Image 1 (cartoon, rainbow, N blue to C red):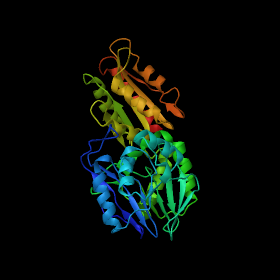
Image 2: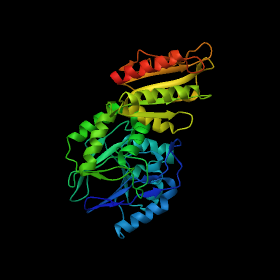
Image 3: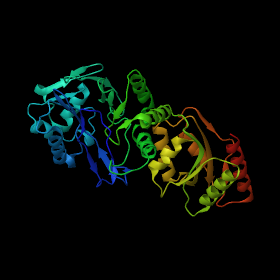
Image 4: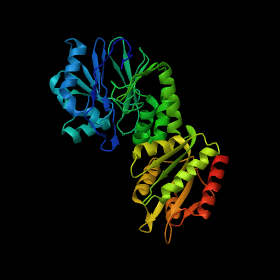
Length: 388
């Protein structure tokens, strides 16, 4: 992918096509990019390192990009190891360079490396600046986006924001794919809990003239792509509905709950629902199911009573939603139970601390398999959801 960078900024990151699970849980079929940048001015500043496996490749990228010059500064915006793992390698390779980071980042360096380079460090906070020559960098704190030590960096000369993990996405840079899909899955999964903090950062960014955003994952954003990303981040971080439609997330042991779900989906489509997305929580990517739950305005949860509780994949899915502050949605329930069914009651109770949810009046009750009664309830639920 061609990198549209401002003059004086060099890309020195790497692509990783060996990773199977990002952060130990997110499937990344198109790999990951670990972005790093260098600003070349009277002084040279490098932004962040890369994953531990690519340390030597990254150092080679630095040498190639700088044409023999040595960096003066390593700016550490985020201490997650996919970005910070090679700090010690860099500091050894460039013994005259100084380390620029927040106070909390230096505390984390003690944890990761057993040292924080006290004689070579520059501690920065909100509004701190660093002069490179023609450019002066300004640092903006971004706590809990998505770790507490995070800073982002603004270069007023080129009107560029180095955004740490903000505006990132899954996928390596040498793969062409839609930005929004993998950026949404990335945001909801990794940053979704911290909507208020992202909103605070967006308010700070609104006071800056930004033409280019350089994130630590995914492509550099400018022009229409940047405008679209800012629009979507505003929706995602305020937990608003992005697209009209219904998500049906289900588990099914012997296929009867699946039959009910398929019937509900067919009736919703027949009644004009603009989008119906079905996900089997036992087989499909859980992160994509979570992504869809936050994208659309209505979710139907269908599962069996299991050990006087609910099926484990459904419990895990609801926990993924509630821990990410799921809100501003309509929630409907389909329960199945051959005796003493409790699934709908258990599922609703799991949302007791969630804000601004509307629960559908119609609950579909299966007693082992579809019946005339449950088919009628499915028809009534489809009517209710489409009317809304």
